View (cartoon, rainbow, N blue to C red):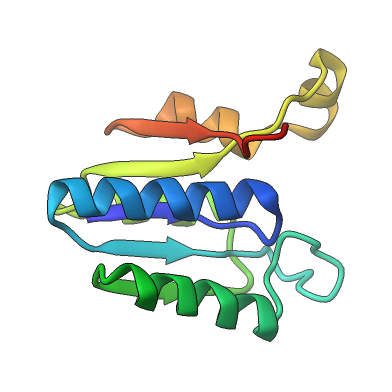
Length: 130
């Protein structure tokens, strides 16, 4: 299984596309997780129903078996790391954005935490035009 950390932006779309490609190459399924700590109405990375519909449609078109979860009230990094603890989890795919050193210090970085703490391979991707 390929675990994909999805955010409702170009970085999340890139993660989905790369995750689909990896799943097709490996002959496995994908688990897409779009999590929020609970600020769903102000969390720009938490997908709305139309965005989720578009992701589901893309997953259906790809032909890979998939599951999509949208947990609320959870830490996104913890949710993804927990998913990677599954025996069949092979790879974590995340979108990654450039942040200044001060931005990392003040805000922390989910991507950085995942890269450092995930016990299995992590594929960090960017959209083509970023």
